[in-house]
Image 1 (tube, helix red, strand yellow):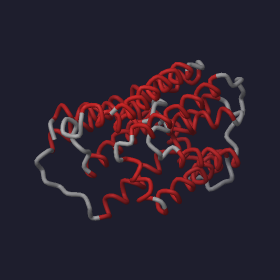
Image 2 (spheres, rainbow, N blue to C red):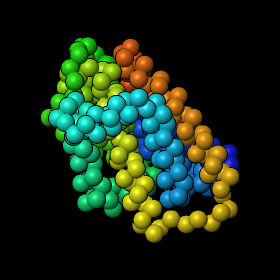
Image 3 (cartoon, rainbow, N blue to C red):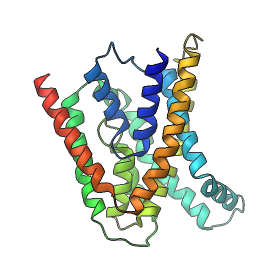
Image 4 (cartoon, rainbow, N blue to C red):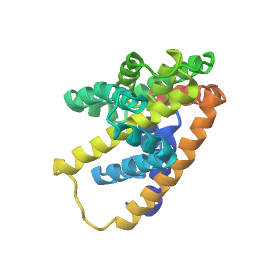
Length: 264
């Protein structure tokens, strides 16, 4: 793997993990447009490294929130922090179930099916458009909301459906405050990322050759820095109701992808 390729993939992963444009969809589009020979296939190890980088950037941005949650949990009381943690667990369940039971079926969607990615981007665009038009509230995420948002996160495992876009849009359409929706969306994915990393580490499929350490390190730094920028920026954009810009972007890219898929 070339260092420049690793940096490019790191930036793409870091930005699109938080911006509502689908990281998996953009990686699939990048491989298709540049060619599989031009953009190296991500090894399992490199995928783990990029996911760890984006998870770490989330922890840095929400360090105060995470500390507050942990401090509340250590009180062993039915307080707001304990309730929030249970909501996070509830939101994880649909993705965990789908990931464990339908892993092979999900992997089949990542074979360069550009038309499918394009149609999923159109769905993302519709979700973002309606979420952007939703009225401002001060409502928190309820236990029922957490389950529904978790289902949207599970659906977002498909390439082209933005995880952050789907979860934030679902929360906002359920009447949740936009800032609280963004906070819940980013915090709810941290346990899933570390769970996926642990699964990959114990799978025995990781190979440590030592040949691409520099390139992978560069990709990690690129993903971490891009994630910091994207996560902070996304919170401000949601608060200011700027999701319609991403809806337009996903619409345009989706149409281009569908057209490219048919012509190509």
